[in-house]
Amino acid sequence: MQSEALRENEGKNLTVTVDGVSYHRIPVKTKLIVKDDDLCEVARTYAGEHLREGDIFFISEKAVACSEGRAIPMKEIKPRRLAKFLTKFVYKSPYGIGLGIPETMEMALRECGTLRILFAAGVSALGKLLRRRGWFYKVAGYKARSIDGPTKNTIPPYNEYVVLGPKNPDATARMLSEALGCTALVVDINDIDGVILGSSDKTLDRSLFVRILKDNPLGQDCQQTPMGIIRPL
Image (cartoon, rainbow, N blue to C red; front, side, top):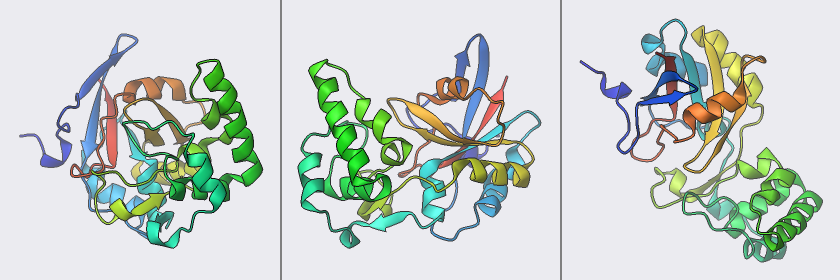
């Protein structure tokens, strides 16, 4: 009988085939991850017993960030005028807020620096003239890309928070790898694209694993599955 914790999320496929190889992407349901949680202990508790030889463990960057205390209550963020102005020019994606509200833009200014965000905005404006998207985040970097605000489906209490990117995703991946005895990844995957932020294996082909996870098999609202297992078949 399939474990309740290891069932695919509604609307998601359990299996994907990339370059002729099939993989299970098994979501793992956990407790709500909060500040000061021991991620290694959480991973061992909820995923450890399900891991097999050859498996790769992966975890959402937001779960990592929340454990590090990098979830900031919206009410504590006071956006400056510049943040409110820049927000007007941000592409509003149907898959997430990103920097589309003053609070998230304010945190981008703090995380990345005002000059870098202004330069990214200028490059983005040029990109729009050329009908190209994504230039803003290429210049601003992963710290800006990883910032997100609450959506209607965000699980409480994070429906009132802005979540930043993790501090050191490679170090976190190595820590989780040692705890679990397998390769570990910290991932930022949404329903459009994704990036592998951290890996315990320097030789791992990150672009391959973006393709394996690109349809985002995890879910962090009512599904409460911020981590998972990749299993080659």
